[in-house]
Length: 220
Image (cartoon, rainbow, N blue to C red; front, side):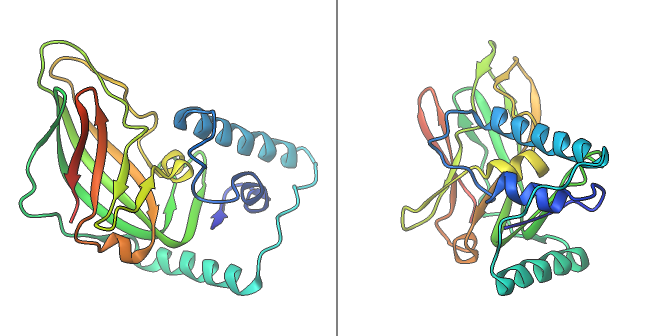
């Protein structure tokens, strides 16, 4: 995984040191939103330190071939952009408790860039980032608590893929909603990192944990 930050001097080195990989271990005591916030705060603090004359933090050594591949993938991303994937048919609305969810978009790419020009951050992986877009609405008459931070993907073989914390912080919906007011309609983006063959797996599905149990939303 490689990070690129064209608008912050020295941030390529710093971001690689701080983030290391594109996903965080599920055993971390921090929540996804807290971890994402802490990561970005560290990046901004390092950028300010470098601007004031401090030396950039050393970057962990990587194999030249891998580094070259990641640079090539990032350059290719700049030319072609993400690939839009077909939506499953049928693409039915699914209910997680009283929150109705419908898949509206799927995109895969080797690189992602921040939604905000203030950060100028990007991530590149040898696998693929999968961007899952949903429209949601609470169809109940009372507020509906629901955490999407623990959503995951599963394929036909039972392999699971947790939310890609760093990609979510850079290019996803921030912060993820935790409560839907009655009739509240919200568009949500979830970011995952998985092998290319898993993206094309016909059994690939998004799993969301509700109060009534796990709910599967087919993606292929």
